[in-house]
Length: 200
Length: 92
Image: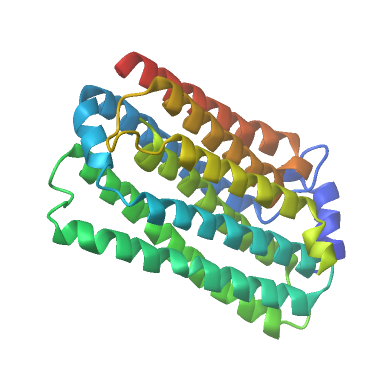
């Protein structure tokens, strides 16, 4: 689909509403809103359970690596920024810039799983497993679920890059949909970082 | 290159990085251990919600999107923040 077609869709499609341009595909937005609602329930349940054993949660939180937590937050924010710029470049026909920015997104985003493994390995070796207590159960399940989203996002970025390099006329809706997914991965991590690492 | 640096996305990213570093500094361990602290908790949760809004509005481009999308996504941020703060206040 060309940029013109995308703009026409924005003006005429019923799912776009009276005004405003819907980036990506409606289906992707339904998936994202559903995912946000599910994670939202997990976040609230975590805080309620935390309130039942606050000392245990605080004590367990102290074993998390704050440095890796904040570094991974900066990693996702920076890769999201590159992807947002890349999407803008693709939309304005700057394909070479878009390819470079998407490649940078993938390289920076690829640091996240690597750092996550560096964080998990010493903790697991020290006996801090999901079975240790409710905090670590929540920590491994929610950050593990998020890591699955990151890995899927990296695969999607790979497909976006291939599309941008090979397609005669890039489908901007596909690029936008992939970008929205990656930004959601970033967004979820921002809340996970606050809940597991920062709240007291 | 200048077009990417003087870009609202870059301003949003700078702000996101700044808030992240500030919230990390705010929640640092004092005296080597963590204590229950409502002020720090409210601060980091509000800052996380502001960051979430910035990502949705600027990176996900919802600020130029249709009204239903703004209502749903911004509503999610406000709703989750309100429920997290209420859950913390009533359970801790």
